[in-house]
Image 1 (cartoon, rainbow, N blue to C red):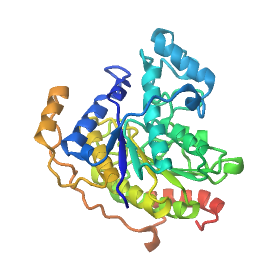
Image 2 (spheres, rainbow, N blue to C red):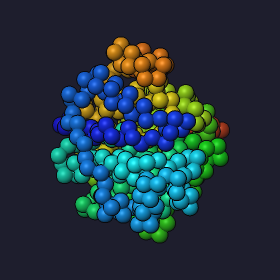
Image 3 (cartoon, helix red, strand yellow):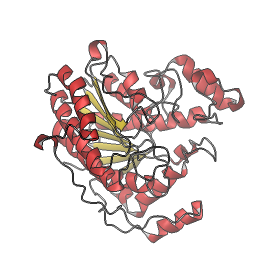
Image 4 (cartoon, helix red, strand yellow):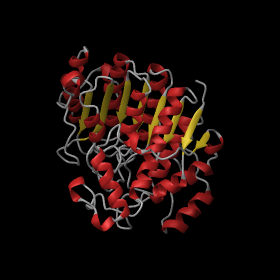
Length: 390
């Protein structure tokens, strides 16, 4: 492990702002960047601002008419075309929307390029992970799908096998849709069950189509799933699939909205379990992808207590200098939190649940357990399509 790593950051990404009443408050990005700095992690890796994704790059995933609609809404928010999902409650139009969305996409594409070229082993864009945007429409707070664009750029550069691992509480539907028939991309999503959460997709039976049959894998976890079940489900599915697929690059999405404090979902996962899965993704990249790892942010709406800590842990792991769970948070950052939000910031980088303990799948399963039922449904639906035993 060389430890070479890159943080993609341009302060202008905080302009991705749907307005004061919207849950996706850009303060979460600013506070994360400041906490990364407070721990000195920005001295452990290169901080790089990539150029915005141009039209030719955006067209790798998005339809030209949709890009034109975003540009029009960006110039005249009042005239946003709702047929493209713009100007809705979830995705209100705002001035400069195209420019900042293309900038965020450019950071993820730049991360993928740097990793593929071998400039760095790992790269992280916590402003990215906007996984709901579709080829022809905005959805779920997402305008351009930077995760899909990063993967599409890797394919354009010659990658033959890219694995996408999504642990956001919401199904990674836009990425799945972009590569539904493409056997070069294995998409794995662990999320709250579609019966109880947007976007109501991500059933275990969704496994891809055509040449891509078996290249989509979905673990739909019951509401209320906590640390042990969530980490168990991850390890019961992801490593075996990656060992079979042998990806050249792993792209992972680390939405922090699985947390028990998140206001928009119903899982009961702690910061410590999120960190455990971040560590696992790092280890899996070295085990199966020669260390090539692109890590992205995603959802997360507990914007003070959870998101900055979760993604600072992610940056530390990417940088090769993990922040200890028991670490105290610098007081200067907590003062900044109060000045910005009038909220009291957390004191430590843990929820007090480290180390996270879970039962290994190989030791056996309980057919009456709801999490084990979810894992079994996934393994039975997807694993035989990849020549694996369910």
